[in-house]
Image (cartoon, rainbow, N blue to C red; front, side):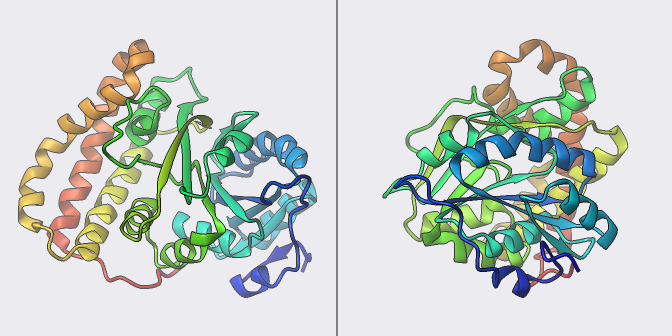
Length: 320
């Protein structure tokens, strides 16, 4: 087996590597959760490599793929640490495995269907300080020709738009596709991710433990994937279902049936939230994509209702 490819978490965690410290600043690792095409991963890595080389930051790719695929990625990117994970692993699992292997004082996360702004890493890590253990940036859309790709962006990442208004009275909403953590909280985030928890659960727990979260508006990541209508409807349904079940498990006091009966109103509520967050600078695209965006948010809402019907998820490690 190529020494840059590990098939288990233990082997990855034993690597005696430390990112190169070029200044007095903290060392940095970037973790890419990857379970999509190699072409998307290549675009992501090509956007990361120059700024990571400049900062002396390591790149760790936790990729759910077969041995042949992993070997090709490793040959193409010898400076990237590739961790092989069994196909079928979830995005939270991939994040957890990659973070556990990362050696930096700061660990930044993104996903293989994203490309980053040329100053993303510098800008994002500046958001971390003595009082902020988590910093997250904004999301935009790199695929701007097709209506369906705009709809996918608005329905999944519109809430994290650079143009969204800030509420100083509430903690910021941050996405796991564009976030960085200090070493103080990484072990906790890894443990939760390994149980299948998405970033919203981790961030709520960190807040409850006294950690501060910060939104860094100019640290931009761009969604870079072409979508199919049916496939993304299924994706939204599954995410909505799993969100509801994990929500019930996380807070047993949740009013399950009230949430279920309120779910038919979710598409309209979510459309207004997306419009408030993202449409300010994207009105033309938002209006053109509105029917498909509404369809995707409806699929999410049906999934969420299904999750409330099924009841709480069983917490614990998720099979890969």
